[in-house]
Image (tube, rainbow, N blue to C red; front, side):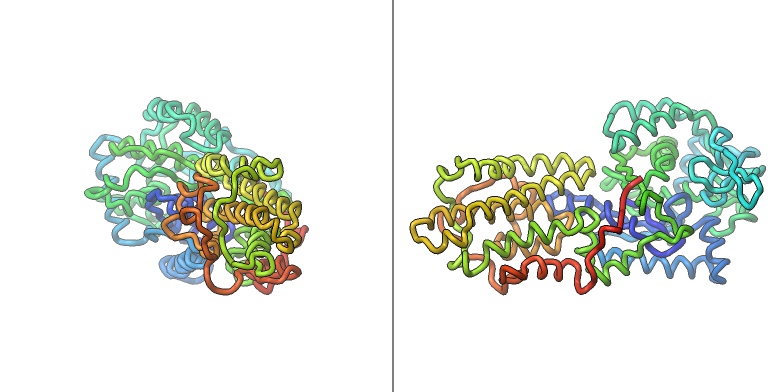
Length: 523
């Protein structure tokens, strides 16, 4: 389950990790229910002050702005093959009904009271900020107070709101975290959240005056107050699960995928709200850092944001997505390896050879690659389950490099000329095809379209492409008989000098290659 931005059009950060996680589970026979919800990355969903102001600045009604940007997010899912089960908008009637039901439950359980609230309020973040997190900066020769967490300006605010006793859930939240040290990944965010919970001493406001924020869901029975946008937003997870009557089969969520700037809301507020309602807590939170360019966080105000649609149009969606992990390693290792071993000049019978004599595998040149492949699926499983996809991809590409190295060392273009070397040639081709088969299965969450083409070329049945099929390596193909390759033309070209160019053409289209000056990173 993941949250997306609706205040403005989609940016680079909105698709990458969530897409990999859900595809990992789909391809390898797990059953996620993936919900793509258009919610602003800090504090606003389709409701709230930020959306309200953004609409006013564009002379639009809030719902008109939401309609426009939500359609862009739906297109983002289609463009980058993000396979979501539901696309819920918090302006929908089904969500309003769920929010009202949830409010009434925690109210009847005695966890809502009304009181005056005062403190430093950040309009950009739509949240009150504690005194400890307030600093001063110079702007236009004047000192202004800002949130130390986001850098956004704050102002002193006093108003009557409905309150939630967050501090009374401190011990339960701490026990929830300490009962599983992998509750939040990576560990640095786990440690940060534990510290945040320990420092929790105050209750929080869960409503705002409707006179100030009219774009939202009214408090049941009190039209003068609008429900706090983050309480509203987080409940969307329950809306798609059918709360309050039909959610048990889909809840609790096994994983929330979030950016680090909304960890407080998912790791502190949300579980406290759920405890107040008597609902089970999520199992895991995967928290990622922010994309940067030249060590600066991407920001519309800085003019350094990346439009994923523009990148997809120029480089294709597959090429851009893979670039974010490994640049053009794919063209150099993956497609090149398939081209070489399926070329008619080397693989004259166009087959996937049966298992050759195992004695050849004890040759050191084979053994290194064989040993790596036999443990590769376990290594990737560990990295992928920890949401460290780049480490898993690194391990896969390392095997592909060794496959190319093996090909170069044995020179099959020379072996094919000598009938006495047929067994060695078959062993090389078989080993390379096994390398491609295993790596393709494991790369499916990252580049599903391209891996499907490679596995089809290798004539691997669709029911033999799950994670479990990557583990048994170097087994007889078709009971010891050679297996024909898939039909159709060569997937990436067939001429030695055109291999990388043709793979690049498939991945990146007609656009220029990414230059070394394009420095992406994570903060």
